[in-house]
Amino acid sequence: MDFILIFLIPVYCGLGLILLKNPIYAIFFFIVIVLHMAVFLIMLNLDFYAFVLVIIYVGAVAVLFIFMVMLLNIKVYERIVR
Image (cartoon, rainbow, N blue to C red; front, side, top):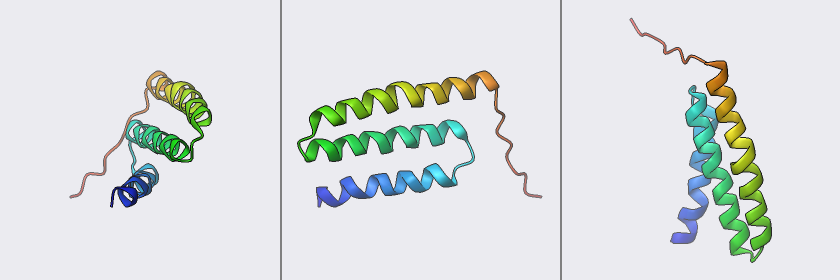
């Protein structure tokens, strides 16, 4: 049962990544997906590759995306239903 949950969380996060309008929430879902990819690699006894994946993607790419969104001051416009 735990094995199924480990594989369902990235699927839901992938859907959230695609469907969300707010870029900050999408980046957080991207971080969760990358961390789960690292868990899969650890389950395959590929510890070094999991460590490199976390350092490169979460440590560099995701932080760069967060800074880019903050510096560009992207506004999230919500639809107002009348």
